[in-house]
Amino acid sequence: MAFVRQKGDDYFYLVKSYRVGKKVRQKVLGYFGGAPVSTARFKQVKARIGKRYPDLKIDWDKVRKALGIEESFIDRLLNRI
Image (tube, rainbow, N blue to C red; front, top):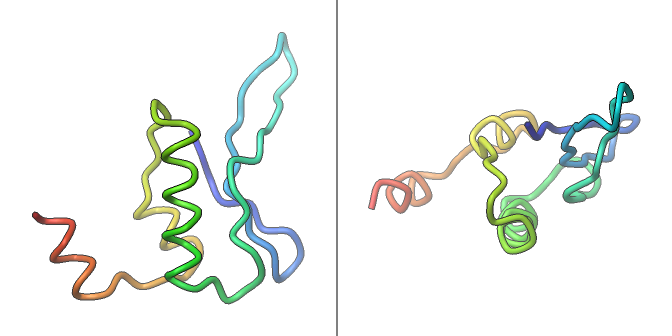
C-alpha cells in the first residue's frame, strides 16, 4: 500500500510500507517536490514509478487528492478511453 507522506509544510513523497520481521519499514517510491505540486510533475513521477515498480498497485486518484491536484477535463476523458 502506497501513501503520500508530507515532510514539514512543503515536501511530498510517495511511500510504501512493509515489514521486516516485526519492524515496519518504509521505502520512498517517488519525490513530488515542494508545494504546490504541478500536474506535469505528478505525471513525471507517476510514469517513473510505473516503470520502476510495474507490479505495484497504486490508487493514483487518492494520491492526486492528497497532493491537492484537481484532475483536468481532458485527463478525465483520456482515462475513459
